[in-house]
Length: 231
Image (cartoon, rainbow, N blue to C red):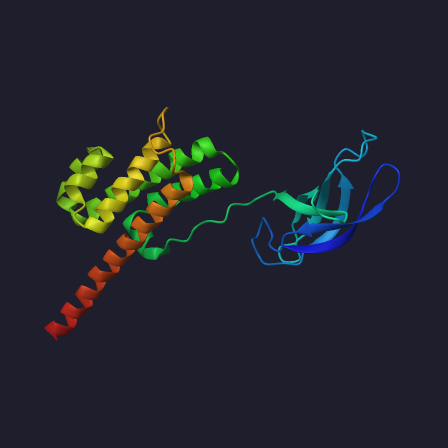
Protein backbone atom coordinates (compact mmCIF):
# COMPACT_ATOMS: atom_id res chain seq x y z
CA UNK A 1 0.00 0.00 0.00
CA UNK A 2 1.11 3.54 -0.79
CA UNK A 3 -0.29 6.96 0.03
CA UNK A 4 -0.89 9.86 -2.31
CA UNK A 5 -2.29 13.37 -1.95
CA UNK A 6 -5.26 13.93 -4.28
CA UNK A 7 -7.88 16.56 -4.93
CA UNK A 8 -11.28 15.47 -3.64
CA UNK A 9 -14.51 17.09 -4.82
CA UNK A 10 -16.89 18.12 -2.06
CA UNK A 11 -20.14 20.09 -1.86
CA UNK A 12 -18.63 23.39 -0.79
CA UNK A 13 -15.05 23.31 -2.05
CA UNK A 14 -12.43 20.89 -3.20
CA UNK A 15 -9.99 19.43 -0.67
CA UNK A 16 -6.53 17.94 -0.81
CA UNK A 17 -6.55 14.69 1.14
CA UNK A 18 -4.12 11.83 1.65
CA UNK A 19 -5.49 8.52 0.39
CA UNK A 20 -4.10 5.04 0.71
CA UNK A 21 -4.12 3.22 -2.61
CA UNK A 22 -3.20 -0.22 -3.86
CA UNK A 23 -0.16 -0.97 -6.02
CA UNK A 24 -1.72 -3.66 -8.21
CA UNK A 25 -4.50 -3.56 -10.79
CA UNK A 26 -7.70 -5.50 -9.96
CA UNK A 27 -8.19 -6.27 -13.65
CA UNK A 28 -4.79 -7.27 -15.07
CA UNK A 29 -3.16 -7.87 -11.62
CA UNK A 30 0.04 -6.10 -12.66
CA UNK A 31 2.09 -4.16 -10.11
CA UNK A 32 1.42 -0.51 -10.91
CA UNK A 33 1.45 3.08 -9.78
CA UNK A 34 -2.20 3.85 -10.65
CA UNK A 35 -3.06 7.13 -12.35
CA UNK A 36 -5.51 9.12 -10.24
CA UNK A 37 -8.37 10.62 -12.26
CA UNK A 38 -11.08 11.73 -9.84
CA UNK A 39 -12.14 11.51 -6.19
CA UNK A 40 -15.18 12.65 -4.27
CA UNK A 41 -16.95 12.09 -1.00
CA UNK A 42 -19.58 9.38 -1.53
CA UNK A 43 -22.65 11.46 -0.72
CA UNK A 44 -21.34 14.97 -1.27
CA UNK A 45 -24.04 15.80 -3.82
CA UNK A 46 -26.98 14.67 -1.70
CA UNK A 47 -26.00 15.56 1.84
CA UNK A 48 -24.63 18.45 3.84
CA UNK A 49 -22.89 15.98 6.15
CA UNK A 50 -19.19 15.32 5.72
CA UNK A 51 -19.01 11.72 4.50
CA UNK A 52 -16.06 9.72 5.78
CA UNK A 53 -15.71 7.54 2.65
CA UNK A 54 -13.91 8.71 -0.48
CA UNK A 55 -14.66 7.14 -3.87
CA UNK A 56 -11.94 7.42 -6.50
CA UNK A 57 -11.38 6.52 -10.13
CA UNK A 58 -7.94 5.35 -11.25
CA UNK A 59 -6.44 4.26 -14.56
CA UNK A 60 -4.06 1.33 -14.88
CA UNK A 61 -0.93 2.28 -16.87
CA UNK A 62 -0.42 -1.38 -17.77
CA UNK A 63 -3.77 -2.51 -19.24
CA UNK A 64 -5.28 1.02 -19.55
CA UNK A 65 -8.45 -0.06 -17.73
CA UNK A 66 -10.35 2.16 -15.31
CA UNK A 67 -11.15 0.97 -11.81
CA UNK A 68 -12.67 2.43 -8.67
CA UNK A 69 -11.31 2.46 -5.14
CA UNK A 70 -12.83 3.40 -1.79
CA UNK A 71 -11.03 4.82 1.22
CA UNK A 72 -12.33 5.42 4.73
CA UNK A 73 -11.24 8.08 7.17
CA UNK A 74 -8.63 6.87 9.66
CA UNK A 75 -10.20 7.78 13.00
CA UNK A 76 -6.97 6.99 14.86
CA UNK A 77 -4.82 9.30 12.78
CA UNK A 78 -3.92 12.83 13.79
CA UNK A 79 -4.02 13.76 10.14
CA UNK A 80 -6.84 13.85 7.60
CA UNK A 81 -5.82 10.54 6.05
CA UNK A 82 -7.93 7.76 4.55
CA UNK A 83 -7.30 4.02 4.49
CA UNK A 84 -8.07 1.76 1.54
CA UNK A 85 -11.13 -0.49 2.03
CA UNK A 86 -12.02 -1.94 -1.41
CA UNK A 87 -11.60 -1.62 -5.15
CA UNK A 88 -12.92 -3.12 -8.37
CA UNK A 89 -14.13 -4.37 -10.69
CA UNK A 90 -12.16 -7.47 -9.78
CA UNK A 91 -11.29 -9.80 -12.61
CA UNK A 92 -10.48 -13.23 -11.15
CA UNK A 93 -6.92 -14.38 -11.70
CA UNK A 94 -6.93 -18.04 -12.71
CA UNK A 95 -4.76 -20.49 -10.80
CA UNK A 96 -2.28 -22.21 -13.09
CA UNK A 97 -2.02 -25.86 -12.04
CA UNK A 98 0.36 -26.87 -14.81
CA UNK A 99 0.05 -29.26 -17.72
CA UNK A 100 0.45 -32.39 -15.59
CA UNK A 101 -2.63 -31.65 -13.46
CA UNK A 102 -4.59 -30.61 -16.55
CA UNK A 103 -3.65 -34.00 -17.95
CA UNK A 104 -4.96 -35.75 -14.84
CA UNK A 105 -8.20 -33.73 -14.62
CA UNK A 106 -8.92 -30.77 -16.87
CA UNK A 107 -12.44 -30.65 -15.34
CA UNK A 108 -10.92 -30.09 -11.88
CA UNK A 109 -8.94 -27.09 -13.14
CA UNK A 110 -12.02 -25.56 -14.79
CA UNK A 111 -14.30 -26.09 -11.79
CA UNK A 112 -11.70 -24.86 -9.28
CA UNK A 113 -11.17 -21.64 -11.23
CA UNK A 114 -14.91 -21.07 -11.49
CA UNK A 115 -15.17 -21.51 -7.71
CA UNK A 116 -12.30 -19.08 -7.29
CA UNK A 117 -14.13 -16.55 -9.47
CA UNK A 118 -17.24 -16.94 -7.30
CA UNK A 119 -15.11 -16.25 -4.22
CA UNK A 120 -13.62 -13.10 -5.80
CA UNK A 121 -17.15 -11.88 -6.55
CA UNK A 122 -18.01 -12.50 -2.87
CA UNK A 123 -20.42 -15.37 -3.68
CA UNK A 124 -19.24 -17.26 -0.63
CA UNK A 125 -22.27 -19.57 -0.45
CA UNK A 126 -21.52 -20.81 -3.97
CA UNK A 127 -17.72 -20.84 -3.92
CA UNK A 128 -17.43 -23.52 -1.24
CA UNK A 129 -19.76 -25.85 -3.14
CA UNK A 130 -17.64 -25.32 -6.25
CA UNK A 131 -14.41 -26.17 -4.44
CA UNK A 132 -16.03 -29.35 -3.10
CA UNK A 133 -17.08 -30.34 -6.62
CA UNK A 134 -13.59 -29.65 -7.97
CA UNK A 135 -12.15 -31.97 -5.31
CA UNK A 136 -14.43 -34.81 -6.40
CA UNK A 137 -13.35 -34.47 -10.03
CA UNK A 138 -9.68 -34.31 -9.05
CA UNK A 139 -9.78 -37.43 -6.86
CA UNK A 140 -11.97 -39.50 -9.17
CA UNK A 141 -9.96 -38.62 -12.29
CA UNK A 142 -6.75 -39.40 -10.41
CA UNK A 143 -8.23 -42.72 -9.24
CA UNK A 144 -9.18 -43.53 -12.84
CA UNK A 145 -5.58 -42.85 -13.81
CA UNK A 146 -4.38 -45.32 -11.17
CA UNK A 147 -7.04 -47.94 -11.91
CA UNK A 148 -8.25 -47.52 -15.49
CA UNK A 149 -9.87 -50.94 -15.43
CA UNK A 150 -12.18 -49.72 -12.62
CA UNK A 151 -13.19 -46.45 -14.29
CA UNK A 152 -16.95 -47.03 -14.33
CA UNK A 153 -17.02 -48.13 -10.68
CA UNK A 154 -14.92 -45.14 -9.64
CA UNK A 155 -17.16 -42.65 -11.42
CA UNK A 156 -20.30 -44.16 -9.86
CA UNK A 157 -18.96 -44.33 -6.30
CA UNK A 158 -19.37 -41.82 -3.49
CA UNK A 159 -16.27 -39.68 -3.01
CA UNK A 160 -15.47 -41.22 0.39
CA UNK A 161 -15.74 -44.75 -1.06
CA UNK A 162 -13.54 -43.72 -3.97
CA UNK A 163 -10.87 -42.46 -1.59
CA UNK A 164 -11.07 -45.56 0.62
CA UNK A 165 -11.04 -48.07 -2.20
CA UNK A 166 -8.91 -46.56 -4.94
CA UNK A 167 -6.44 -44.04 -3.45
CA UNK A 168 -3.60 -46.06 -1.98
CA UNK A 169 -1.09 -43.22 -1.50
CA UNK A 170 -1.52 -42.45 2.21
CA UNK A 171 -0.55 -38.78 2.03
CA UNK A 172 -3.02 -38.11 -0.76
CA UNK A 173 -5.71 -40.23 0.92
CA UNK A 174 -5.40 -38.36 4.23
CA UNK A 175 -5.49 -34.96 2.53
CA UNK A 176 -8.47 -35.98 0.40
CA UNK A 177 -10.40 -37.26 3.43
CA UNK A 178 -10.00 -34.01 5.37
CA UNK A 179 -10.74 -31.91 2.27
CA UNK A 180 -13.92 -33.96 1.74
CA UNK A 181 -15.04 -33.33 5.34
CA UNK A 182 -14.50 -29.58 4.94
CA UNK A 183 -16.08 -29.59 1.49
CA UNK A 184 -19.17 -31.35 2.83
CA UNK A 185 -19.51 -28.55 5.38
CA UNK A 186 -19.94 -26.16 2.44
CA UNK A 187 -22.88 -28.16 1.11
CA UNK A 188 -24.73 -29.16 4.32
CA UNK A 189 -27.13 -27.22 6.51
CA UNK A 190 -25.13 -27.74 9.72
CA UNK A 191 -21.37 -27.30 9.90
CA UNK A 192 -19.28 -29.89 11.74
CA UNK A 193 -15.97 -28.04 11.44
CA UNK A 194 -16.85 -24.55 12.67
CA UNK A 195 -13.22 -23.80 13.51
CA UNK A 196 -12.21 -24.22 9.86
CA UNK A 197 -13.37 -22.39 6.75
CA UNK A 198 -13.12 -22.22 2.98
CA UNK A 199 -9.47 -21.18 3.11
CA UNK A 200 -8.63 -24.43 4.91
CA UNK A 201 -10.58 -26.36 2.27
CA UNK A 202 -8.54 -24.68 -0.49
CA UNK A 203 -5.31 -25.40 1.40
CA UNK A 204 -6.01 -29.13 1.59
CA UNK A 205 -7.11 -29.28 -2.05
CA UNK A 206 -3.90 -27.58 -3.16
CA UNK A 207 -1.87 -29.99 -1.02
CA UNK A 208 -3.67 -32.88 -2.77
CA UNK A 209 -2.71 -31.30 -6.08
CA UNK A 210 0.93 -31.01 -5.00
CA UNK A 211 1.16 -34.68 -4.03
CA UNK A 212 -0.63 -35.81 -7.19
CA UNK A 213 1.76 -33.65 -9.20
CA UNK A 214 4.68 -35.32 -7.44
CA UNK A 215 3.19 -38.75 -8.14
CA UNK A 216 2.82 -37.96 -11.84
CA UNK A 217 6.42 -36.71 -11.97
CA UNK A 218 7.62 -39.83 -10.14
CA UNK A 219 5.89 -42.06 -12.69
CA UNK A 220 7.53 -40.13 -15.51
CA UNK A 221 10.97 -40.36 -13.88
CA UNK A 222 10.51 -44.15 -13.46
CA UNK A 223 9.78 -44.45 -17.18
CA UNK A 224 12.89 -42.42 -18.04
CA UNK A 225 15.06 -44.62 -15.83
CA UNK A 226 13.54 -47.77 -17.31
CA UNK A 227 14.17 -46.54 -20.86
CA UNK A 228 17.84 -45.92 -20.12
CA UNK A 229 18.23 -49.36 -18.54
CA UNK A 230 16.78 -50.97 -21.65
CA UNK A 231 19.48 -49.30 -23.74
